[in-house]
Image 1 (cartoon, one colour):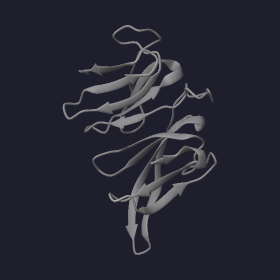
Image 2 (cartoon, rainbow, N blue to C red):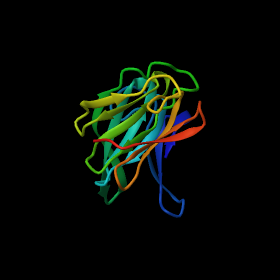
Image 3 (tube, one colour):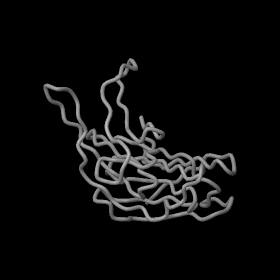
Image 4 (cartoon, one colour):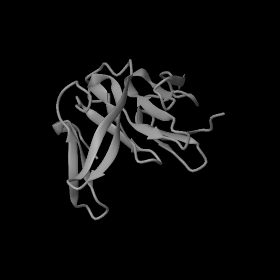
Amino acid sequence: MTDTGNKRVVVFDADGNFITQFGGAGFEPGQFDEPVGIAIDKNGTVYVADTWNQRVQTFTPLESENGLAFLPEKQWDVFGWFGQSVENKPFIAVNDDLHVFITDPEGYRIIEFDREGVVVRVWGEYGDGSANFGIASGIAIDAEGRVWVSDGAFNRVMRFTLP
């Protein structure tokens, strides 16, 4: 889970027991400034929405005799996460093709990246229409690959079926 106030990620087992933590305040790879959204792909790679550093970071788990560690792997910029308001809390989801979907709450949009961090598509703008958002405040992908987005401003959950 992200521990936003302490600028880190904390890992627990299924019973809630502490395993490890990683991160800390800063802008270097492996450090965070307002980590919010977190997702894990089918290979165990961890994706963190590092909001105020305006990037997504990925981490590879590494087991050793000393325990579990998470190594910074990749990062890519997300232009638009510039606001340091209480509403700018982006969330993240990863599909089976390892495409990364992030919310851009203050940009009223969703951004899809491929596994290398290249933008595949962007959709949304402000409004209450069928492809618009007030505040995209959560995101998930179901088993059929549909993207579900919660809109905190208009009190709704929206479903998108992508080609």
